[in-house]
Image: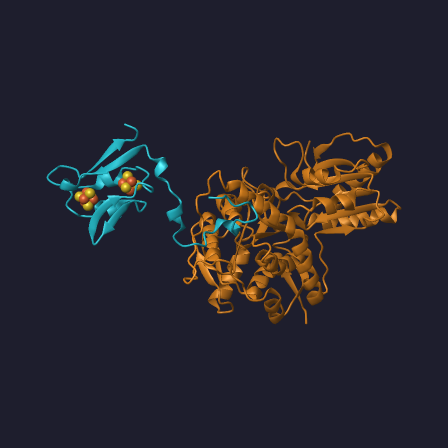
Length: 393
Length: 97
Ligand code: SF4
Ligand code: SF4
């Protein structure tokens, strides 16, 4: 039986972690993710979970602690944001390269400088190629649901990779929404017993982690990692199916909104998708065939499926909440462009950068983009392929 | 030894075989080679304990010969060796001389 509550995104994720009751967590506070671990450490102190909580002196150590505990054979999780993720950089690759199923909530926040604590995607995008699986979440419900599913995905014997669950800082992490909680017992059964793979603490079968791999073998390990990434989509979908049976909530690798018969479309991640859907509804009422695609599984990026879902459109605008300096386009745009590239007949694409450092993304921004899409779909001509919106010129 | 392909390697490069470092011979990295001068040796076993690999054999509690297959020539044993009356029991010699 589901329980309906009014909670913030952070509270929801902390509650999911309580329900999963991992063996070990190693964490360091950083705005806006602090609240998750603060709530979780209260659960530890109050005896609500059996988790061994390691309080460390930096995020570099937080992820190192997670790596050690995961290699030892425990179910492990942590949470961070922005600079914290940046400080974990080295460890992120070690966690994924060592194939450790660590689960981490990333509350998306802008990177410094200039110093800013508000939501944008520059942290998660910076870490998009570090070999982790990334699930992005539109709202608190999806963040809660993704957190629970992340353990099953990470720990799947065909995968064994760390998973990052992304949600927008403040907009989702600190806003109260109506969400549905599963029962503790349901979550416990859903994630199941943790299964180890070559745990360090199995003294009967001694193993070593982290050997030096020279040019004669390094590529084989990278190739194997790349292969595992190709299996992620299927596992994510399988886990989503089981989750739907339990919760009634359906998840795919992306959310396609009014896309089937659409002629113009917006591709956008996380919370801004909600605002955009409203704008799309009002354009539909005017008889304009608009749709939206919101990636959920961003790494590995499901190129084939996304390409297939978008190829029939006349024009697409990809909205990025992070820029890739010196790269021609924003990170989401680059992947969307690659996914429609194989088709001879493909939509015209352009890119907008929005909402950096927590700048509001308003319905009028979505409307501006939709109006431009209508124009581009008519003329086939794009004035500017990439530009910032909602900025003072 | 036949090299494994990418489908055969263990996930995350975990070594599941204990003591497999024995198969990984690193002696060819050496530019300087330690030579043991037995008459200057006081059997303190500093060399054995300081060697970062296991390149010094100890048998029946006594300093034994070098296992050159694993000696990288770092020179730590020679540095730490107290020797006898100011005379080192280990000297480093350039390889190929
Ligand atoms: S030179 Fe270095 S590696 Fe070789 S035996 Fe001495 S301490 Fe060991
Ligand atoms: S350190 Fe020198 S003196 Fe001591 S056991 Fe080794 S060779 Fe002998």
